[in-house]
Every structure is written in C-alpha cells, then in structure tokens.
Image (cartoon, rainbow, N blue to C red; front, side):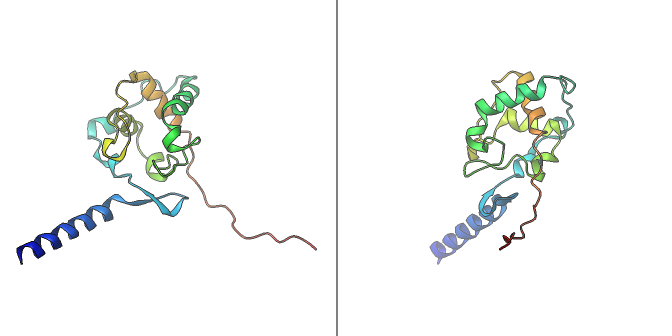
Length: 150
C-alpha cells in the first residue's frame, strides 16, 4: 500500500513538473517546447537594472558577433530557437527588461543546458542584451495558399 502511494505521488509530482516546464515556442508549433519561467526568477534589483552602454552605436553589431560565437549554436543563427534552446524572438524574451536578460546571461540556466556567461566581461553581456532586443517577435503571415493561374 505504501509503495503504491509513494509511486502515485512520484508520478503526480513528475507530471506537475513537466506541465510547468513546457511552454510552446512562438511560431514553432507544439512539437518544440521550451521554458521561459527562468525570466521570472530574476530578483527585482536585477530586473530594474538599466543597460549602462545603451547609447553605444557599436553595441548591437558587437552583440551580434558575440551571439554568433556563443549563442547561435543552440538558439539558431537568427535566434529562432531549436531543439536545444528557445526562440529569442518570443514575446517572453522581447518583453523582458534589459536587466532581466543580463541577469539570465550572467547566471545561465544550467539545468536546461544554458551555460553561465559570467566570465564574459560585463560590457559584452550588455552588448548581447542590445542585440537580443533587435530580434523581432514572430508575427503570423498570410498562410492562405496561392493558386497559379492556368
């Protein structure tokens, strides 16, 4: 009886964890799922932090290079996401504050495979944040099939 109860509780717990973890990736369909919940874990102090290099004219270009070197392998060449990592053009990312994104880059999400990037100089992490802010949310396009004239 105890073993059955323990098994039932374990299965229920695992089901609840999976239900909380999996969120659809914008524009990718239900076959690929990722979690954006880590964004909500940023402390208020980090969330409110402003990008000290926001006005840097070269920041986005530098951030793009860093993205290509460190992030594109998992997040895709244009941040569209993939099997390893979520879309960075998703609403959750694009609506996050710069401080939240910086906090996430600094701390990573190791249990989900995202490394800690705290060894990158702070200015480079802010450049990555600047680049991430340029990725646009995916918008639905007209999916009406076009017929050719005969």
